[in-house]
Image 1 (tube, rainbow, N blue to C red):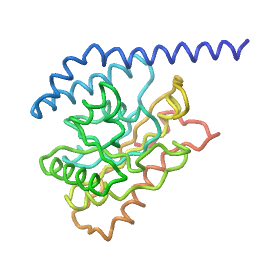
Image 2 (cartoon, rainbow, N blue to C red):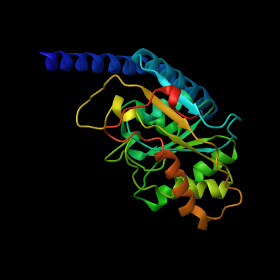
Image 3 (cartoon, rainbow, N blue to C red):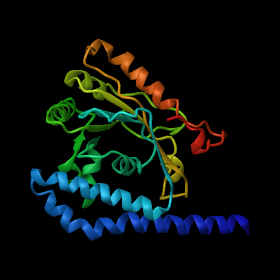
Length: 258
């Protein structure tokens, strides 16, 4: 009986969370489509996306614990390098990072009906299997960084097999880009998102606390492309340090550093 009630509760919450994610999109879709028509208006489209993310997470009723290791403002522009553990990672970054944030995602996102073209027109999509596609995305990201727009990148490129426990191999692109432009890297850990929405077959949502840890910026101005492996290792170690191994309890916010 208890298992049945738990199952019903999970299905009801999944329906609730899905409703409050999808409904704001359809309500605001005409405005989003209009704002996507001109590059000068895309700043406002991102602001609308941030509002959508904040509203949806609020309606989900889950706490979002944000830890910022540095008391000083994050230098702008910069590259936020994050782990990738859930389909809600983009929403959590939009919810926690202010300003006109740029985002790099795989080109399959552009194929999502209705939402995909809006994402591709506002942010950067990359075909990682194509050297030409990677080069085009690199050039676009470099140009927008030089114009002052910060960038968020999932360094693993995809959701790993053990999100929140182990990191997948980091791709070089974000680190090469940071060194080429001289902007700092801000490592971001999101160790709990997969508990709310795991990457499994079928839609599954579970009520769970969310957490984002923003580590202190890492300067890259004195680095060369030969430093990419060491920079990747440094960022990966900082992100993985916030993971919670399976079977270990999640610490209370008062015991977290930051």
